[in-house]
Length: 188
Image (cartoon, rainbow, N blue to C red; front, side):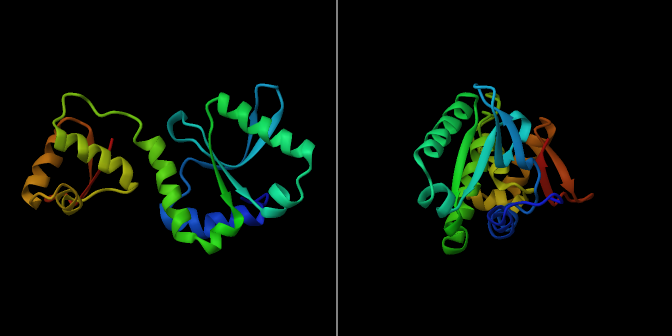
């Protein structure tokens, strides 16, 4: 961040990413990537949790549409194609949408992150409620509470606590806060 980011990237981080996610974990600005043609490419933001490859591109109207010549257009197509073949998932965000459609962009970011966080299937030894709690915990991006689980599953608080205790015993969840009575849980 100290070397300077583009204005669109800074606005995206300020109005979309941080208010939605609350941290910059696994997010790398101006990430250098080599494509299949052995050319260096730079991503505005790379999101890489546990080996995943997500690229976020902030696209201004001028450089990505109005002022685009044929050669640059072809290069952008090659860039996206070659990086996609290397396993990158791209999310283009129009600069104008950052201010005009903030809530929609925030929802888009949650869906984008969810694509990487919910790709693992929980163990087949779990029952359906335990499986759903694991998926729910992955989507939440913060520690979960028994009340969160109770509301999500439409069960009592006591039943939610029993499910959470089983997941802790199975070493899928860990106790995040609280000594006598655990208040929050997170994935191990």
